[in-house]
Length: 242
Image (cartoon, rainbow, N blue to C red):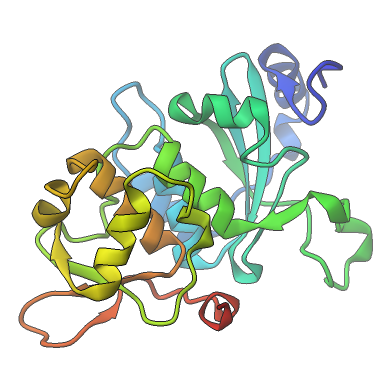
């Protein structure tokens, strides 16, 4: 662990630790692992961080992700079923936040931690290190390296905001707030959104990814006449907010 960056490892220390513990590394659940193996590699090689996070959410499976932040390693454990993630550093802390556009996945494995309230009390982490998962997913989608729509979001559909959601995560100025208000008022295509003030194809795609991963996006597509959730995972606490 680097003394100057608590909660983050130096890449060299991480690699030594991984080499020493290689025999003890635990594999991800079979269905999640199979899904990850089907993913296309990124242009630089390796797996797309946002696609991996989306797969964990889709399967409702916890996973420990080691994310590369320049010369540092940021350990993040996802708990989709509880809408939480565990990390000694939050996504909006200085080092992870600055590295989000260049974030890369170094390794993904089965979580050894348990969520709060689990009967295996000795495997529950420090309470202050459990944080709301939507805040991490939103940061990865809006500021992370992926610039295109997630593969599971159809590009030829129309989209709108799900009723009753409260997206305080997005109220940080810029074009996202007004764009969300437009999606609340009515449906739009990716092409429509790309022409809105301050948007463009990349920013519109990022917004749709963020809404999808936080259970806030609805898709309208032919031949079905009505809206349906874009994700099978809906967090009750999200729909109750506001």
